[in-house]
Length: 114
Image (tube, rainbow, N blue to C red; front, side):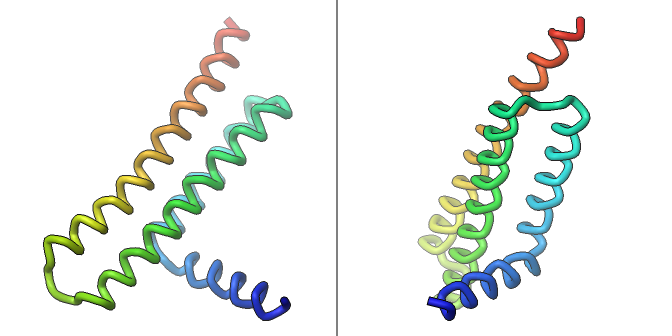
């Protein structure tokens, strides 16, 4: 059991070395700072945390897919490109849904102020 957790934490450490993952983590930190500034409610924090986690998880999985594809086929390959596009699309879908949640929450806070 310990080795599984050790492997998982090693995987997180490896993921954090990837540029795309670090960007998503940085954006998540910005979202947390923004949430603190506008004083999110408990439910809003839950939504933000779930969204941040979904985007970072999608990015880690996409990075794993890309690395595996590059290992299996280092040369340009139309089928591998399609697989990589699907992974990138998953990150984009998670990011757009998260952005929508963020916009809806922020709009609600600004309409309360006005």
